[in-house]
Image (cartoon, rainbow, N blue to C red; front, side, top):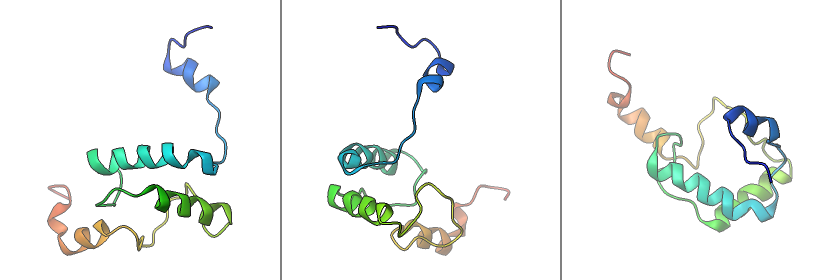
Length: 94
């Protein structure tokens, strides 16, 4: 088996596919990592596996489109409220 040596090599072999229910645990772990360790999410709490499974069911049923930026408030992301009430969170000088 040949090892991948560069990012370009990795990207040339990467495949994107729709998520399936068997991906729920891995998606939940990945999402929770960023909830705990970064500002990439507006979530303040980690999600449960059941919440991620429900998310997948909603998206698979066509109720929402995954992976698209939106300009509406996310009702499940309470950090939106914190941000609105505490505008001091914005970058200095902005």
